[in-house]
Image (cartoon, rainbow, N blue to C red):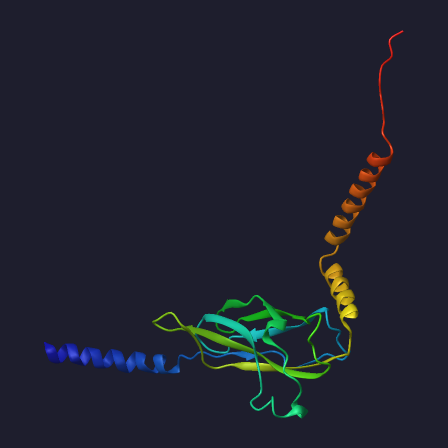
Length: 205
């Protein structure tokens, strides 16, 4: 009886082991390089081309995008300056992909008003599967990345404030115009009430 059970277990392992071995987690990106042609201004918020992230494996799972740097980039100026990770935001930040499924990730680059060194910048935009260990900690295995190149032009603090307001105005249009219109109307009403007092009364004959 035990021999029969052992034989059955061996047969099951032989049948299902190739499937377990062939199962893999994979990732790819649909763009190899993103180059921003025009110089960027501090204070502006830029929308970059979206990054297609593809599940190239045969298992579904959670994926994400992050900013990564080239090894030795700090000591090699020819590779470009390192932009800070907090300058970038991704939408969605994490997402679920079935095998062969693609997710378009929107990328925004928000340059601070000050403290941005003019020059050429380089960074990797990396797509990767997200694994969670037994302890709940997140770990990253395989990854694929697109290269991003952009240039920051010199600007003073006043130019930065101007470009940041302009960028927010365009981004949140038409709500900015609506709020501004309501504010103007409120100011006009306040001025009218201050300088023009309407007295309405009924006189008895």
